[in-house]
Amino acid sequence: MRIPLDYYRILGLPIQATAQQISQAYRDRTLQLPRREYSEAAIASRKTLLEKAYGVLSDPETREEYDAGLIAKAYQLQEQHPSVAGAPGTNQTVTGETVEAHTPTIEIDNDQLLGSLLILQELGEYELVLKLAQPLLEKGDSVGLSQGKLGDPQLVQPDVVLTLAIACLELGREEWQQGEYENAAMSLETGQQLLLQEGLFPSVRGEIQADLYKLRPYRILELLALPEEKAIERRKGLRLLQEMLQERRGIDGTGNDQSGLGIDDFLRFIQQLRGYLTSNQQQTLFEAEARRPSAVATYLAVYALLARGFAHREPALIARAKKMLMRLGKRQDVHLEQGVCALLLGQTEEASRALELSQEYEPLAFIREHSQNSPDLLPGLCLYGERWLQESVFPHFRDLANQKVSLKEYFADQQVQAYLENLPDSSEETSNQWTVVPSQTTTYATVGSSKSILGQDRLSNGQGSQTTAEPVTVGSRWPSGALANGVSQSRVNSDRFTTNGVSTLPTAQGISHSSNGSEPQTSQDLESKTTGLRSHGRRRRRQSLGSFLGGGKSGKTLDSHNSTASGGWSRGGSLVKDSSSQRS
Image: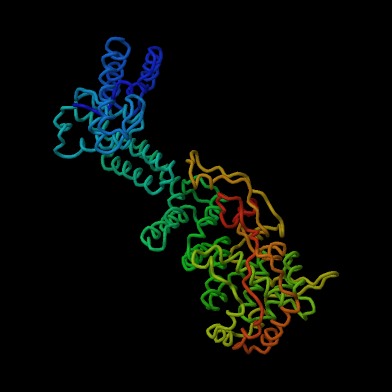
């Protein structure tokens, strides 16, 4: 039979190689043995081809005759296909029918086929190996493996299976390097399925499975990033994500999913994929994860509930977010978020109490600055909450990233007004939650005692701080490519403390100026907008809340202070601020 090889390629040399280079290449190739799983027959077959190639090329007369034949074929190819011809032995290839018609070939015996497959595999011709080897395992193959034409079937068949599996493994790794993650997974799974079907080489199966585990985060991002029309593929990405979460026992769990991602790395991975999920998908995912329980998932669920509740004018979702924040509030200062929730529910007095409890000095300074000449902090909180939703919440949802935030339109919605009108008195809900403690300088508050369902102390205690995350090292082998660049980042900055690694509200510096250079609204403007809201909240007549916010601009965009270095896991914001808090 003839195979698509020439003697120069067998030794890994160009046609211009010197006699010394030929001798050195032969010595090197004979010392480089195939994988130990191959049989002695396969190794001997490969060695026979190496010796034959060396015998032809090391003798000047036979080499000259062989070269003449190669050059003649090259000229013939150039005349017939001038745009694709290449010199033999230069590793230049052509595609399509010209490859089969004009690629240099050599005649081999049947028992040398395994050796030629090994050499092609060493040359990186994985697809060609699959093309040549797959028919050998089919019933009625023309070569006659089962009839013993290639040698003892009991010895040859395992070698063919191993060759196919390794070709799938290496092809998958090659596609991984090229950023074709789902194609890489298909190649790896093909090899694994073949080995499982034949019941052979468990060590190679384990090697393939290890790569599949490490490849899984890349596949998830690739699948979730697909357009909405690719619903089946996107659902597959969500299923893979849920498998990882189950194996890890939650977002901040300590289980081993074999991906090589530590807790901090996985948080950055979660933050990166959030931009590919809709608010509904995130709500479903993170509410389920929050029930483990998980503080990180709880906070992400709050984001999703707030975003959906505001965008779709469903205050009931905001009320659910507020209840979840109550649980987090026993371990972490989330009073600003609680204040925003209370504001969106028309509970102005409760919003003011939440601000009194907060110890986030810079955001409070911003709120106070924009509440001058006002009896309370409502004007500043309105501006702060509106901009926080626009800059820190909505950008993390695929369906809301480009949507404008307007408190005026929210409170003017009849569905919102009807819901708020029927809300129970907020003072009844919070009478046992807030206790104001006088201080010499500022009035603070403490949370009423009750056992936390999470059963732990505060998640982090560095309010208003910034931390730097070390470069991420993931697994034993991260290929190059878009995601590989994202796996290693040198710095993760955020504007505020975290809830077990999740960025919360930005500081006052982060929202004090809009991106278009416009000046923030004055305290007088905000006061005129919120006077009615304040009195309206006290009377609990909420049906026309939107009218009290009229006349001002809303939804101004700002320079984001939650972004990180491009290409990092934490695209669009950082999940990780204090690695020590991940395990508290």
